[in-house]
Image (cartoon, rainbow, N blue to C red):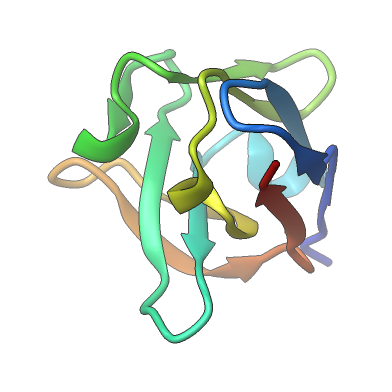
Amino acid sequence: QVQLVESGGGLVQPGGSLRLSCAASSNIFSINAMGWYRQAPGKQRELVAAINSGGRTTYADSVKGRFTISRDNAKNTVYLQMNSLKPEDTAVYYCNAGLWVAPYEGLDYWGQGTQVTVSS
C-alpha cells in the first residue's frame, strides 16, 4: 500500500519560513522521484519542486532561490524548505511520487495535502 503523509503547513507572515515534510511508505520512496505540487483556489495544480533518488532537483521558476527540496533516504522522507514566503505562495501543498522524466512526471500517488497560508 502506498502512503504519503504530509505535515508542516500553517499560517506565516510574508517573508517567513516553513518546512513541509512528507513521510512515504518504503515501497515507493526507494524507487521513485518525489515532488511537491501546490494548488491555490481557482487555479490548476502546479509542480513546485522535485527530487530524484540521486538527489537531483528541479524547481518552478516562481520558487527558485527561495524553496529547497531535499530527501532523507534513511527516513523515507522528503522535505520542502520554504523561505521568503509570499502571499502568492498560499495554497494546499501536496506530496507526490513520480518518475524522473523530462524532468519530472507525477504518478497518481498523492498525500492528503497541507495548507500553507502566507498573510499578515
